[in-house]
Image 1 (cartoon, one colour):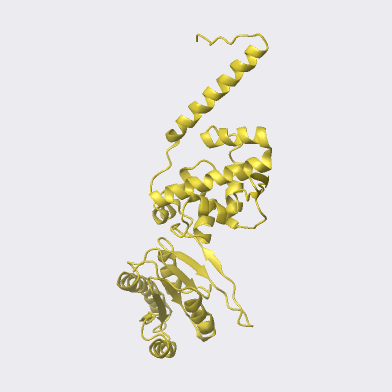
Image 2 (cartoon, rainbow, N blue to C red; image 1 turned 180 degrees about the vertical axis):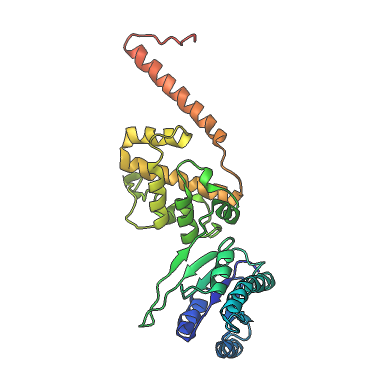
Length: 316
């Protein structure tokens, strides 16, 4: 099961929001509802599935584990409680392998953060290969969306197909923001230019005839663009190609424009790495560094000749 919407509707107050999520966010991989131990809620969604959705929804139902710790004296309860922990873990392992093991790249939506063994175990394992979304339900029926992303770089690298933290300036935080806001698939953008335009970090040229009147970036509050701008700040003293590129632009254009331009370059690099499923390779920029060195040398020789001097290469 891949690229699908998976919803954990724990109770009746979440019914309205769960159904609206199904309507508002259609997924090509289908929609799966996960219900645990609530028979009435299970029958309710079965009826909705048959009468409204024509049986297109997949409904997973399983009972919650019932322990035996309540029986017997205090010492017996303690021993049975320990045994129940191991039995519940084995039970949840079986449930996960039976229903959730093949889920990859799915949107997992849940409506409650209260501690529950099954929820903690299942959501923790699902977060390794999927995107978690928490939608709290308030008293007025409203909801907000909070996305949870794995904090393990290896998990994010597996989801994106490449390790973005190898890019100078891009850390785990920026990678989490990208995954939460866009997801692991950038195919919705035709090319890197469209991706940069969506981020609002490319110039919006105002042209009259053949003359460019203005080329400023427009206002916006894109979270991915903000994360890339913050990532650029760490390149001030970087010895990488991107660090040198940022410092050159900063000297020529000033810090604000240099930050935006470098964030634009980071966005294009990220788009290429994800869409082509390749790793970041610093050696590919050696050619650009050689070009910059030759341009700098020509400029220095021209300036020296204009002043009546001659540059001599150091023999060392």
